[in-house]
Image (cartoon, rainbow, N blue to C red; front, side, top):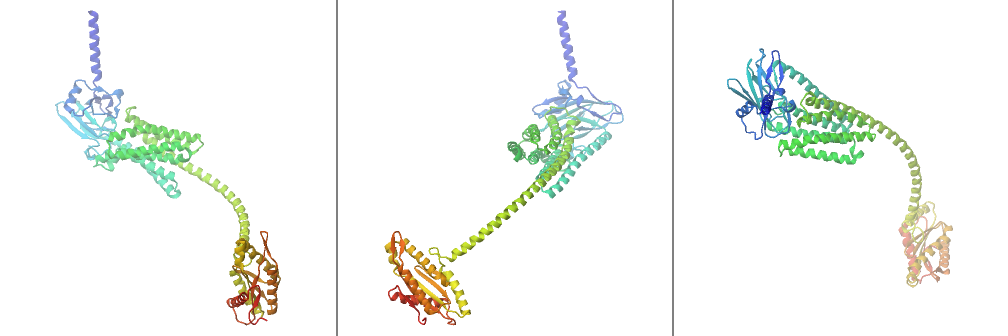
Length: 605
């Protein structure tokens, strides 16, 4: 029994000690103290329904049902319901009774402050993203409240926080002077950060306008997107851009996150030249861009938390993927990726720290809260250097390619010049052959009718100038249709070819102009000849034609010809058509006489 009593007493002491430990220690404002972080003094309780009122939660805190913060951290990640925080405040500072209570996290939807004084009086104040910015005690990016703490009086502080974003409640008390100093330092750091971004944006805008390089354009897109998301996450967008629109203040956060992530991955694609260097990784990067684009569009139709949580979760694999791309590019001997990796290491470290606080993985401190600003500023500066290095490398490569291209071009021009000269010579020969072909009859090889007229007109002009006669013979094979009908058209063609050779062989020494006039008709122009001689040449030609058979396919084909003769005398005033007409009349007369004869036009002999 004695032993049992000792055990019972020990358990009672342990339970009492646990109850005392569960109760948070009072936050004492010592004399001369100007700021005090409340996190070590807070205890908290969870209202999962979000319907509990302040009186009920004061009662729960009085009964010791609130729990101390886990690990002295006021970051809980994404949660459901409302969180209540309780702390007794005791002011021993005789110089200050009016303090500014600041919640150093700008993205909370609803923040309600309850102060219960010893006389039972309760003061209530509200702030958060769901209220206009003017609802805050002073114009500041973080929710804040003026609280009155009488000297040597314990005041109970009860804070209710409900939010669709990450639950972070870093509360602190400041005297007006201390807060002014804090704000001065904070504004200087923020101004320096955004000043760097604006300077880099303007610098690369000038470069892009000058060089028209896509990398500089997407770098500007990245700077703008990242600057916008930081402007929203710091609470400055709500303060300066849309202070009277709480709805858009909440919408702008996931929207700016989507823009920032799209800009980040698109710049990575272009800078690392993924499309040509790493095609598979390029497709993965495009898929990530598509995901964030869809999330950006989803912000207009889905709940805030439904959109923000998967996007925040995607930061981790996105960061690892970019690191992988940078390392792979370095291994593939892409030199600009070295500076790229160094730059992104700063940004990704800061982003990972910030996201870790959002999920309650790390405590909120200077580096986790402002590491993303520090890392992003370093990243932007180093990326600007990386772009400059990449441009210098590309310019050097282009100069080398241009030099090699010029050398190849010179050799190619020399070779092509030689080939062109040869081609021009061949073309001239071909043109000459073509002109000759256009002047010749394809079957007999003699001149065609059109060329004969042109040449005959020139001969007629020369004959008139030199007062010379010009003879014309018009020759037609007799009964040529019978030859075709009896021996076939191929035999007829052979007869025509034979007659062409016969005319050429017998008349070439006379300087004759020979042509196939059409069908089985041939025409001959003989310069500087008398009438008697012209008739004599025609008769000799007729005898030659009928005296020698045409041999074809083992057959001897006898042919004969009728010849019309006309002599143009100088000064007669006849043209080409008249001369040919006279020769044709003479040929007609020879045909009427039965063929195989020569008929001279009147006045020749």
